[in-house]
Length: 111
Length: 114
Image (cartoon, rainbow over all chains, first blue to last red; front, side, top):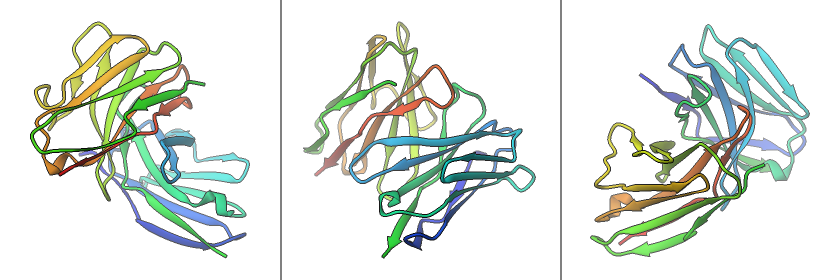
């Protein structure tokens, strides 16, 4: 079946790195996404990775994929107060397929 | 980039009534999606709205409860019919852009059913 799991909460000190982890069950997933949802706003696609990639870096964001373990992580370097949000891991089999979301990880930034 | 608006942004409704949520995109898109985000839960796809044909519903969702219209390539509506408190959720409209990194979501409609 399709399932995406992630921890619900993460607290990080400002300036430290945040690492949000996610596991998924569908080995045929081709697209793996990270979305950000700020309070009162819609979802924003942060980054994505194809299943044939191990890593993707985009400025402060690093995505690591371990396809064997079906484990995806999002690292945010130099975490800022503006990074406070809910981060959703998601997967899809192909580009126009339905996207299966995790429950989201609420990132709390400590001063 | 596509800009998506939804109306209403929030509503409080009585049990047994229906609410229609509108989704407007500022550019023509082929596929539009409706999601539900229940409190403390992940987003769940309700249906895919196709222009010129009936919507495609996911398991657990039926047309009688969530009728969808898609009259053109920039607009769609989702109706939540005969509401109960269990329908209290955020409902989000989403569109797939031309590239894989262009999935856009609307701001959501927060529905509370009393």
